[in-house]
Length: 424
Image (cartoon, rainbow, N blue to C red; front, side, top):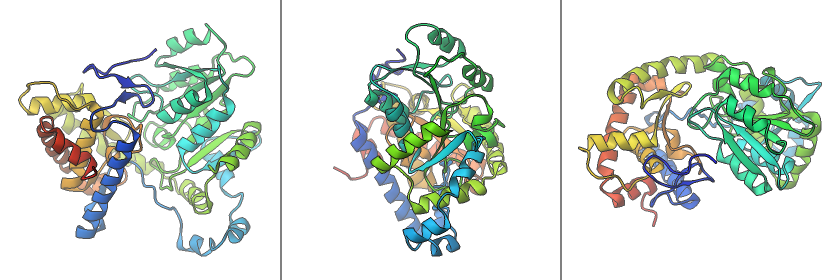
């Protein structure tokens, strides 16, 4: 099931959905990469000040706390008195839920929410169907817990494929829908609604990994999650095109959330006091117009980059612009005069581009500081700092980074230092 090799013949690791390389061999190296990028950010700020970094990650990940909040968070006692129970109603409203039917749980990450829901609700031998837009895949924070639970997962990318799978074989225990993938592919709204309209047998659950809900609302003009149809459980992010902090917002049927809350406390996945308060602030202050404005700049950047690299290689990834790691390698090969195939794999290619944009120009993109399993795609999100740079400066930084990738194709040691720093 699914694609087993990328177009260069590299075997895809099913745990993350892309090929491992000789530099980014696994989780250890990907963590080392992220820590190296964080050091680069710190060094640049220490040398040039905070304005020397241009955040094009699409994620703020701030604390979301006001000075007044901090004064009231002197202890857990003050938290209980001033904040306990305040965030859940805001979360339900943000996702379009009904307080009479739904409850909410604030967790420390979207990945924690996915892990909690899938490992609690699935059992060994369960059948899981996953619908993701064409060109994208379910996030590893979905596929890994399904595997850990001992369930089977079938990844599908079109509604007709889903209907066929739905009506054949063992009755599915769960359908997982990913409306926007990490590679910034967007599921057609009709396909989303048609999936929710499929006749369900008792015991079949619908879980929506709506991490990018803010982009769906602010850029695509989609309705909030629970306004789309019968959904049992869904998660969104508090920091993806939202002010932060990094946290997962899990909303669903009251009976399911009750059981998940108990499990979250057992595993220590619940958001801590400052996160909990920050989430409420972020959702209260959510402004779709800022995302729409970022989308306008993304459209301008898209025109520039498609003129340079081709319409088939550069696509609009919500309020941002994306180029796959595979296409990044092809661009670098052409810039380098062609020749032999690279020893780099796509995820290493997009990471080198990200690291060079950060090192040379202070442009921080997702691939530099992403967690293991993030999509192997060059992603230039215009939120929050795209307008500080402007379209032409972004395009020029990317052009220089591609030139650096062209040289790194033939210098594996140099490529390794770019990605991992001096870590042995």
